[in-house]
Image (tube, rainbow, N blue to C red):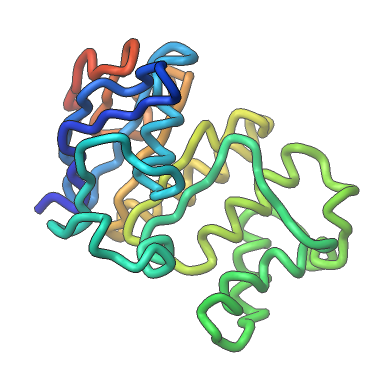
Length: 218
């Protein structure tokens, strides 16, 4: 069953054509990498899949239903998007990690927050830290944790481990693989061919806004 279908998608920025008729399907439970040179349109494609920017033409379907028929807030609860450059807000780590509960109008589950912090090798005392004091890698890990406090149907990751050291990158990879084993669909942009061959079952290569090839790796 296709959980996500991209059908003849174009995206223009002014007169510049970024994506040129992209079409492919993602089956439920796929762990798929997107590779290609910088500027090929990978990040734009992921933003479209996250419903962060409007499509110029074409359609994207989630569980057979066009994005335009979904409430955007409800869609974003089902599709988690981790940016390459993390966007944290407010003053503290705690504020960021309480946000997923508040947007759902649910009681903050401190136990769930602490458990996931520990899974990512972060001490509970980190909750009191000011955002401004965090390193780039720390911000990235907090951003990923915020996105995964509720298990989504689909995880979209844009080079999510690029600012992490090897140890913390491995922790993220292993956790995402665990979620994938539970049936969560993964779509991950990476520049690392080693990473793309190690943890993914499919790979799409994008070149100049078009799909160059789609491979089944295992």
